[in-house]
Amino acid sequence: IQISRGCPFLCEFCDIIVTFGRRPRVKTSHQIVAELDGLRAAAVSTVFIVDDNFIGNKHAIKVILKDIIKYQKVNGFPFRFFTEASLDLAEDDELMKLMTDANILAVFIGIESPNEDSLKETRKNQNIRPRAGTMLDRVHKVLRAGIEVRCGMIVGFDNDDERIFDAQRQFLSQSYIPHILLGMLFAIPKTPLHARLVKEGRLDPTDVPEYGTNVIPLRLSREALQRGYMILMRSLNEPESYFSRLEELYLRGRLHRENLGSAEYLRRRPLRRLKSQTMNSIGSVYYFRRLMKHVKSTALRKEYRNRIWRAAKTTRDP
Image 1 (spheres, rainbow, N blue to C red):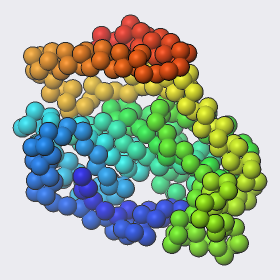
Image 2 (image 1 turned 180 degrees about the vertical axis):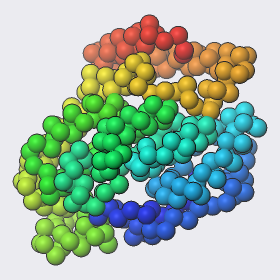
Image 3 (image 1 turned 30 degrees about the horizontal axis):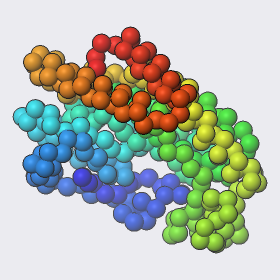
Image 4 (image 1 turned 45 degrees about the vertical axis):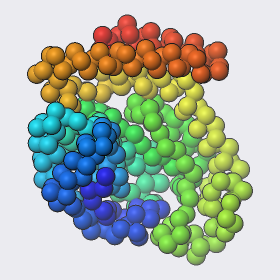
């Protein structure tokens, strides 16, 4: 579902403000409730709120969230939600509490880079707010609120050099973000970045650029950018790296799932909780058998067994 359109920020590489504008518009609660009724009638349980910035208009979205919370409580929490938002979410405790009460499990955040010079270059100023804490501080705050963070990261800004790949790897390890959308900077037509690079003569005009991006970097060769990107992508998705981040969230208490509205709802209803845990247990066995049958790599199957056994020993909640 889509609740709002538009984003108030000015990120140079982004086409959202070109397409939808900078003044966020929000649907009414009546419209959203009607859409949720339709989804529930179709037996849908997982819903992606596709707003490019769910919290672009914080005041209006709080009103919507309060009505979604009422809907969830009346109907037994039929939905779990995922959405996208900006990092300034961490600066609004009330908003995070409303999101977890509504059963928003995860949020995709455009973090982009641990290099503050690159963030300033691309006008991602909402990520650079010293009074609000470092970016790591704010990511950890969202996790403590009970919302998993997924993120977009970019390499190839004008202020990036060879050090950016290690800096990205270190930041992502310390932020405990398992699911990462990593890309090389790409200039989308009609964005301010595209116009600037055309003016500077640093745009590759081919439809399918040889190096995977139409940007000609300033401090990196195109070969070095592509090579560093591929190495970083592989290292982030190695089983040891990926599962370590995942276990920090779910086994070492970085993510406070007990704050979710559905968790509170089930705590008050032991029979419903037992039914939920039983279904999860059955599902766990089913998916484990699928993994062991269909994953061809012997080493990866062993890794899955070890990690699942570690999880089973750490928590009794299926």
